[in-house]
Image (cartoon, rainbow, N blue to C red; front, side, top):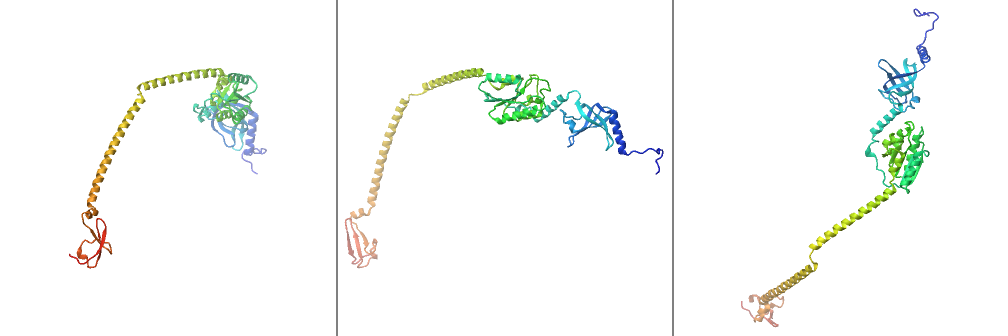
Length: 405
């Protein structure tokens, strides 16, 4: 075998894979873990869930990857243009021979990771409209049942119970104990809100806890808690920390109370103030009723003065009825008399035209006996024809014994 030009006889050449492996081992052993500051560019997340991006500054850049097992613990979402500090190790991706930074942890520059995560969540929920005032519901004026989602230990629950029982002793109070701090707290709070809604007869829900640091209150900045508050069928009052503490829960809730004690004051009226208000309302209604009655009486009095005596009107109507009766009687009498006169005249005319009248004057009616026809012309008669003569009084039968035409 002929050796390449200049290659020592005792040297064994490396394969590309062997060379890449040695470079990788040298990098990992020589450099180890390092902290790097840079700007994220070309950030992408494939279905595997790993983060792939470029970390760059003004002069150089390096490919970087943060595997899913490491990035799940990030409270914020990296994005292009974000300046970060990462901890990782430099190695060689042997398949392509690329230099690559494997990131184990990441912190944003400027804002802390928790604060950045909070701002990102606020922006996302605001775009969805969960902070809009138009979707927030009014609190019931006189609730029959109040639900509380908070820890059983601490001053918050004690203060709320004292205020609720003092202001409205008859109100039903249902406390759903939850963890308000730690990794399990968000899930616990979400379940508590859901259980109170399913319980029924709960008109309003208070969700909150006492004061603390940003880390202590972080459960109320969780997206799951925010969406559970927005989905609640009963109005929700958020009471987290002190007045200066504003969480995502405060922004999504139907009402925000600066403290748990203030939340209890918001959800129920004071019985003494309520009784005073009822007394004042009763007085105002009585005064309004009296004013209305007085105005009605005055209106009736005015109408009474303008109204005529109905008895006088009845007398005038009766007199008018009598006049109409007399007029109708006269008209009827005149009509009957005129009708009788017309009837008499018609009868006289009919009598004049009656054949009986003619007979009374000595005339008679001649009819043939065989068919009863009236004989008007003697030329149609023959000797021996039987005839019947009708007189004014009685009739006679005759036979023709000659005729003249």
